[in-house]
Length: 235
Image (cartoon, rainbow, N blue to C red):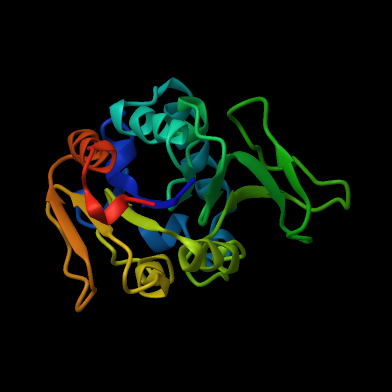
């Protein structure tokens, strides 16, 4: 079974009603991104950061997977699919995807401020000041903030290098290191880029651009991948 690796971004979850900060001039609910998504912001105002993610968590729990999420999950019937996502919501998993790598953390988990290896599943939407880990340290959102290392990047690179087909769905390819994943793929494999406005990626061999919203683009890609007689995908 061929290995299909898909890098997804905010454009996938946007169709489920989850807002992206880049669509509003770099502001999230009126906050500069560095106030709510950086270690400096956390040190400056923990209460603001916790409340910001509490609201994101509430929105996330109301959201439902859309056709793009479901379409990518369906592809597991035909391919060995790995989703590498920049999104922190659980919509890929809820749609049925079984191999999901979250590069930027997960909204429905909390993490110790003292020991980053202490990560906890959340069964509620709120982290409060005074909520502590087993070592007595304040819990923080399990989110990779700007300026922090990306622990899952090494695994994502390995998956990209092994891919027989690579796709990028709903991302501007502006946030590194995730944006560089396509450069680790084998030159000869097909590489799809799906977005409302397809980003520039420089010279990449075997590039297939689909300028469309995520759900429509995934449908178009799926039809091509499953079409009979396409020599690029024959074993």
